[in-house]
Length: 184
Image 1 (cartoon, rainbow, N blue to C red):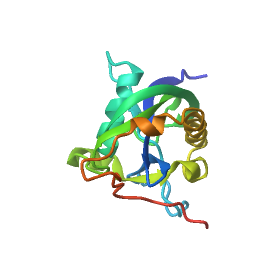
Image 2: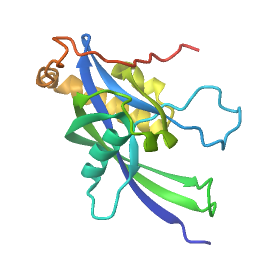
Image 3: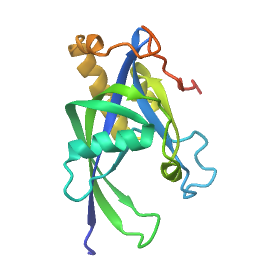
């Protein structure tokens, strides 16, 4: 049996309290073209990426959130490690065992979707989705579980809503791009 490659990534559930509820930053990755027309709904995912050499997973989560969403966020708590196997659709077609460490982060500043041009090859768009809907709206099962853990965490820690200050525009932070899942 051929040896299976391993990858270690980290990502974040970035939360923002606005308009009386919690929102989570999600991304729609660029289509890789690997699944033609089979999937009608776009992929909705949490920001994540490979842990760079010399970097701790917590640092990766904060960096990936900044790169893929355009916002700065503060690390609060580790939520979960998601483990799965996938087959590379590029290069060697190797089976890969992957571990993604997900962290709860709180939005601090920045404009969602203000992504550097070189990141546009990875991310089509970023949007805020209601955290209460994220356990159903996110595409990948492990990330839906992460969203549920984030929802449970904020329910157990209502003081977090008080730690999110108003945006420079005024007392109600503007969310910019929002997406509510369709009911189809």
